Image 1 (cartoon, rainbow, N blue to C red):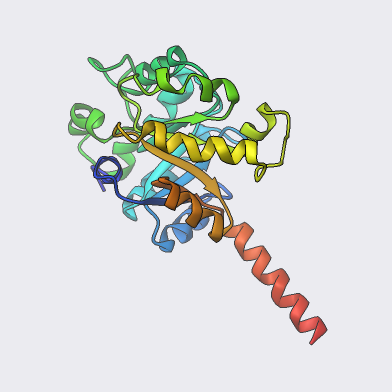
Image 2: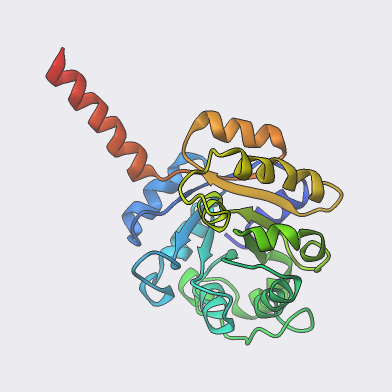
Length: 253
């Protein structure tokens, strides 16, 4: 269970895959972990719950060999600290637009001397891990994911990637489309040109580039463009579509 190999996989430039936890329940989380994924995305930004609702879920996910990745609601030290304390291997910070904001996220995510995160994780007690050993070695396991979701962030990309301590830049195509004035038009050339360019601009670093999509063809395309950290839709979304298709076929045969 500890340490989780996610950070090592990223640094080895492996293809890292995950999916979204649709509901913060132990059964759904454990079921999703059977999909052969590397990380499970737990969304407390847009989901109607916070870290206090997760209880033992991150520990259950860790026990399955999968890295819990919690997206916090904002670049806030209290939210980032709580996400790691409840068991996140990776924390994703949305709407990071400047190098200064990225540097703050790094400070909030790491224990001293690399950062300034306060120390008292709860998850090792739940998981039966050595509490002191986790504290001493947490910085080696911790993964920080910064979201690039705006034209401003793209314009500041060269400065953002100079900030030490960033493991993944995850491009959010929906918010990016909105920042370009074409909300929901994620396939528009203006969005796709930026998405194609980012991996090229970051290739000389050890930062992985990620995104989230549902279409297998689009996921393959982004993989071929250099994206190494890919979120594959969500199980309930895929499942509902299969049931819908089967129902349609059965009613119309």
